[in-house]
Image 1 (spheres, helix red, strand yellow):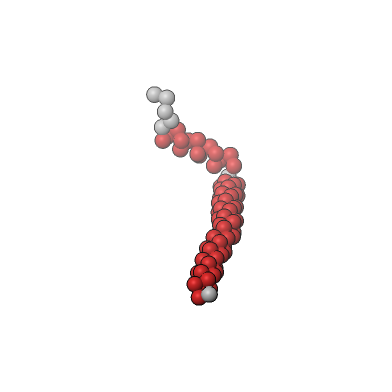
Image 2 (image 1 turned 60 degrees about the vertical axis):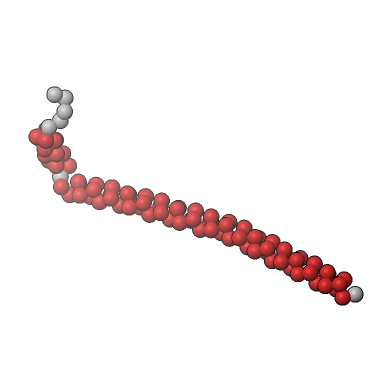
Amino acid sequence: MGGISIWQLLIIALIVVLLFGTKKLRSLGGDLGGAVKGFKNAMSSEEEKKALEENATDKPAADTAKVTETAKVAETAEKKAESKGKEQA
């Protein structure tokens, strides 16, 4: 009833080609494709940038955890050394 048939779409396409010409439609399609490609590249580079920033912020936290763990090990070793020194004295 209210739908557009394939014949109506073909007639509209033919009118558009006659009005604008194939060269203009090709350049329009190329421009549109270039814009989409540029947008995708920008989005992917933005995602990569965010991922690098997240890795950079996560890395110091991991380093801090290592430093804390090393400090705990050193503290435990010092306590053991002190207790051995007290036992020997």
